[in-house]
Length: 307
Image 1 (spheres, rainbow, N blue to C red):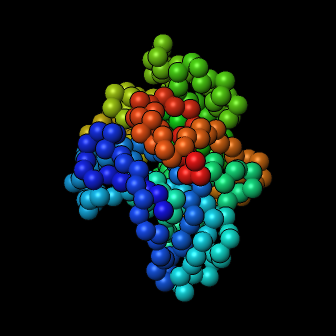
Image 2: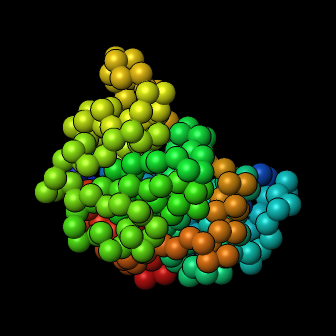
């Protein structure tokens, strides 16, 4: 099998494509012949070494948290999937940039037919992050108003769609080139963060989904109503600022959840969710991760492992 390995933390150029023996599933695991593997910010954050304190990994390791593909083998305790099933899932914090990957069955769901087998690899981590931010942490309800920072990115584009499906009024920030895209996803209002201050145009929102962090997060407190919530998977909100503005601040790590992913798959199958994905050959992994690292990509970058 082919894998991308990291032998030492550092720059993107430390990603190396190698040949290693095939994998074998344990009793509770599913072996997947990978078709697509999404590229996510956590991949290059771990690669840089910045996450060692929180995510200690033995070296070498293989990046990649999400995959799609075909089941090649199952362990004795697996009953939900069979050889030949097409699946996708948030498999773990590592292991996805490869032609084979292992995951426990509870992390997987059947691929929706509305996505190609490769494209489906760009859904699980981003869609689950958006789902959990909105429904578990913001507790978004119909009729509420939500501001989504970084709306055109992988998580943001799903957050816009899921918030609209929940019946919320959706405001998103992005550069001007992505405004039509975000409106097509259901955004009611789009703000060009490069030319205006969003706080001059927004007030009294029930929730902010912060996918940017830093100064953007710091400027967001004033636009939230008292009793509202700021949710960020990117960084821990300032507890002092939360108290000052009478707002709840939440930071969370995305949880792999096959049942939630099956609900997301059903939304795709019903035509209620869509994905814009750029497929990049596995052999061009360094270019793909550099694109993600540079930011401002629309939708998801997905490694096409078949190439």
